[in-house]
Length: 415
Image (cartoon, rainbow, N blue to C red; front, side, top):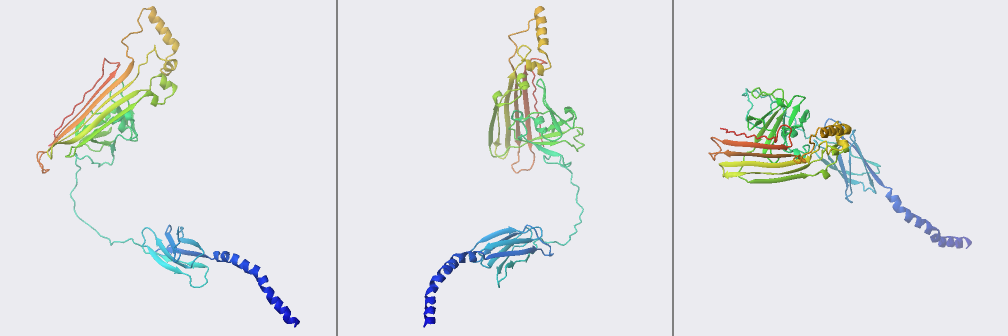
């Protein structure tokens, strides 16, 4: 009876003893389950059994639809980890030049690592060797074409960001954007020039619609094609010691085109040092221009024109109004100026005048136009082009006379 009573009491105390253990098991069970991590490893090789690097590997769990991606290393190996893994995945492999591959990877036993070695098939088709033999006719370069580049040195010039806004349309400024070319600014109204590999500017040549020209400025909005070649090859055109610039106007079409542009800058918008400020390097520039292109008679006659007006002016400095910094920048001492003015006054030589200009101003007007005539609407037969370009520049005050100007007009007819 004593033994039975103790057994019954122990049996009644079992729930009290099991409750803490059962509670701990319930709390730790998710953690034990969460530690079940699937490790997917593999090696990707090609048809020649060589490893393939940078292959995109994507694994998607079958039930949870969880996707993870990675890429193979230089040995073709990859590793993917799935926490709370399901043991059933879809693997996809993709690489440039190889066929995409997809298969299912499933755990069979209690393996800790799922192996997914894969071999990709190449998509590169190797063609059989073919020998082609024929006698071809010699192709001579078309001297009238605008895209001929037999020597490999032709470059297209444009009003890019490397050209200052106040120099747009300046051929010398556009050519100076090419490596090895240096711009030579013109003084007292003379045209700007450029030097190729240290040669003087008069060694360069410019053609306008195939004709020799001294053209140096175009309207910024001109509808033209500019070609620059600093390594001339054509013996018919010559000019081997300098560069060649070819200006080809674009013919009009049946579609009308209009364009207008403007530019302006003022001294407060420019940053210079004290020496530049004292020598009137800051300037004010105003420019307005535009272009138009379209038909005169549908399918028969077309026009293309552009115009531009620009004015640039700065303060005119003399020995009377220049500061000490300005005289120093010019290489003149203040006491030398004072002594000169004193001598002039002793000799009763006037040093001031009411007609002295207060500004150094440069006005420039450029106009470009061409008319294309095609009497035959079928596109065959004769075609005529009449083109012209004019530039007028006036700088005051000047050292060589009251005004400096130039006017250039070129006309040509093509058959």
